[in-house]
Length: 67
Image 1 (cartoon, rainbow, N blue to C red):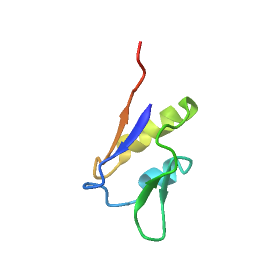
Image 2: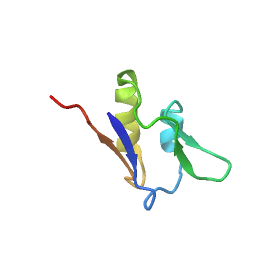
Image 3: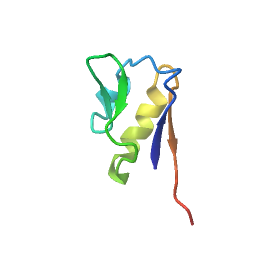
């Protein structure tokens, strides 16, 4: 899985950071940063919740697995 951020939509509300600080970080410059673009599978449920709860729908989860 890979996290994608649409920075044109993102307002750095930090909802995602509160849910999954291992993946999302809003720094002192009030911008969202990804700590990791490819979080471990163990965080999938929490990352999916962050994507769903993003107020601006600026987050997406892409499954890069190839069969």
